[in-house]
Image (cartoon, helix red, strand yellow):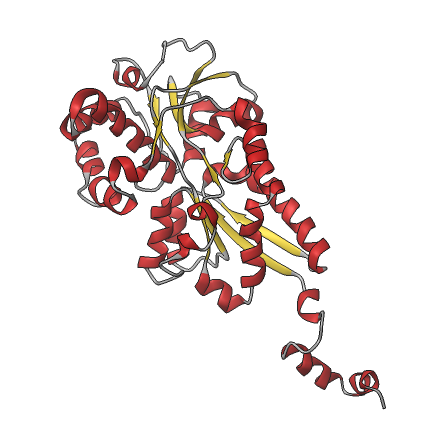
Length: 340
């Protein structure tokens, strides 16, 4: 009697062999679903990327993969994972929010940033200014945002990763121009005095500016700024400030969840595909700056202004120190906003 006839005669034994990994294909034949918990402005990027990855994975393994998305303010999204949202991967706005998953429940390993190239940042971005068509208030640089009568739209740094990048870009500009942290704090306080509403996330602020027609200028992710016309069908002007921050959104497998769900292999492949030529091209097409593919970097270079960019490490000593100094309870933002 052949082994094949044994499998037909004893289906339970065949199932046991499959569980033990002795059968070649059944484990990958089952469909799999991933949950990518991300921040607000990545919606369009991941709609396109998810379809590309699903096609790639099906061709490579024969397995159907469905990727579900959750979007919101980056800090709020990190809190949702900590509170039990079953994320397979976290693609948050900044490394500080991903570090919170380490510190609050050990959802992933402390060395998560070393597990993928480019410090686990497959694409980068920066912070720019968006005005109404024709720039009626003559906005040219950060200085113009503290002028009387200029209404500024930016989200809440307590819940939004993009808002933290915004805040730090403004702080460093003022520190360099006016000399020291005390002067920077005064400047940022004046700016927030011109902010009529704080949305919880970057996309909420974009809607406030573009659809609800509030504000004269929006402080925005670069990719969000260039998607405005496509998304909302209204004309805007993008203003590149004299200096801005190199924003490095981070991606990571949520170890505790993938090990529980048995999805580690496909979750890891999903993030690795962001570094592929197709993944990098999709990033550039959606106005993120490709991080590792020279082909994609060269292809999309013309769509990005050349900016004087500084890093979080250079200006603020990394996210740990920046969080403590500026965004923790009692930090500079709380002090500033209490006086608004």
